[in-house]
Image 1 (cartoon, rainbow, N blue to C red):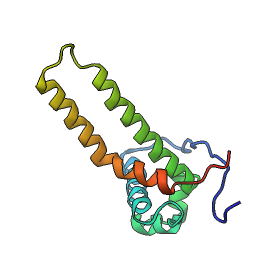
Image 2 (image 1 turned 120 degrees about the vertical axis):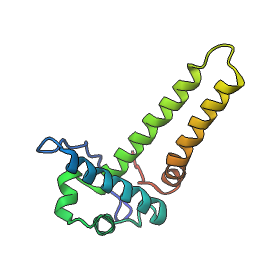
Image 3 (image 1 turned 90 degrees about the vertical axis):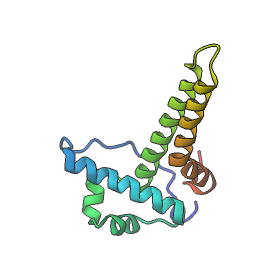
Length: 133
């Protein structure tokens, strides 16, 4: 087993309370900062401490929202996957025959998806957690 790499999968935890607007902002901050750090440092080079420092949060605050760094990574991956499916589905919804404007609109949506998720997809494929199963 590679040091620091866990092969155990965690299920996303439901918070012990209903998330209000402030809590949702905090959770999103953790996800945004973690995404940036994963892109900058790679999954293996990013520690929970890096994420909490970037967010200005305590470790306890981090663990109130996520069970582990792996769970954060999996939430980001799931979000990326769902966004990708939505963009692909939109392509299938274009009218037949479609106009150049329809195609331009879809290509714009695809580029917006890639601007938001493309770097994460590439970096996670090259340096994400190693699954031994």
